[in-house]
Amino acid sequence: MRYFVIALAIISFIGFLDAGYLAVEHYRGEIVPCAVLEGCEEVTTSKYATIFAVPVALYGAIYYLFIFLASVYYLDRKDRVILRFLSIFPVFGLVASVWFVYLQIFEIKAVCLYCMGSAVSSALLFLVGLRIILVDYKK
Image (cartoon, rainbow, N blue to C red; front, side, top):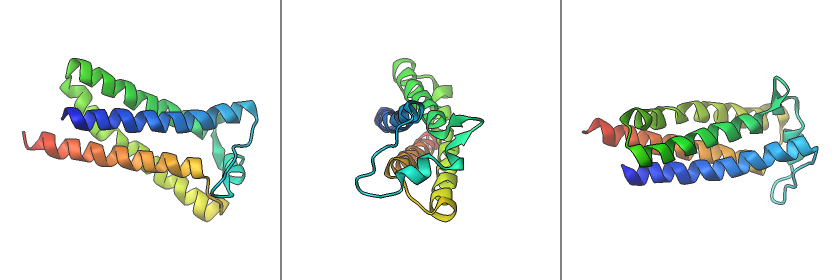
């Protein structure tokens, strides 16, 4: 179980760095450079980039930070309630990521590399969380 939680911590930290970077750049008023894809500006400045005047990236950074801290807490305390939380909470991140990928492709018609990195992080967190459920269920 420990290795799955370590995986959650690593993935969520990477997601935090990605989303945190986007949030910082939003507040700095900077456009993030997109070396591979040419859609970052369209996506990060679209009407979908904020919810209640708060950048979506900041919500993502908080989400990833929360999972990271919960993972570290579990590794320290072995609290089963936290383990169950870590196995279920990534569902919300996956749903949000699917929604934002949909918006990029079908509404904005542009793709942001950093946003897709966040979507991959969310999907990986979901898969590891699912694996935790399956391993924990067998006990």
